[in-house]
Image 1 (cartoon, rainbow, N blue to C red):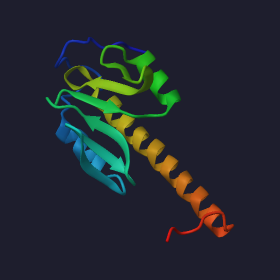
Image 2 (image 1 turned 120 degrees about the horizontal axis):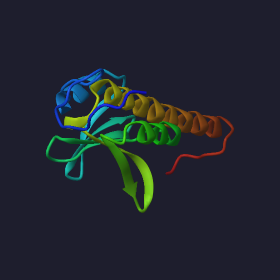
Image 3 (image 1 turned 60 degrees about the vertical axis):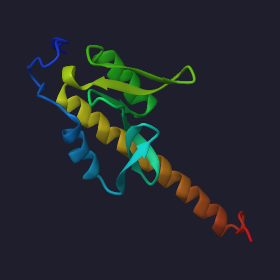
Length: 140
């Protein structure tokens, strides 16, 4: 795979200017996505589950993909991706937007959405199954 220069604003195959508006357009086009504050960050969520956070400043993006997608992306694109740590554990990737490949980052946003949407769908299905079996009761 061809490595692209890490120079901010560099152009090349797959590399185009990327900003938060591009990310916002893609994220908000995905079903059930909402944009909400998360502490002093912005976030995109599906059914309440965060799949992207946007730190202040507009140059970074935190994307919460599956472990498999995360490890592959970090190995393939170290010039613009780095790990996001939470409690010493890697939980996502941090994209440096000025140096990033637009197509790669937007693909990761879509993968994060699918990962979180499937996780919330599975949790709903499990809860629904417990309710049907009489495993949960409503609080008074």
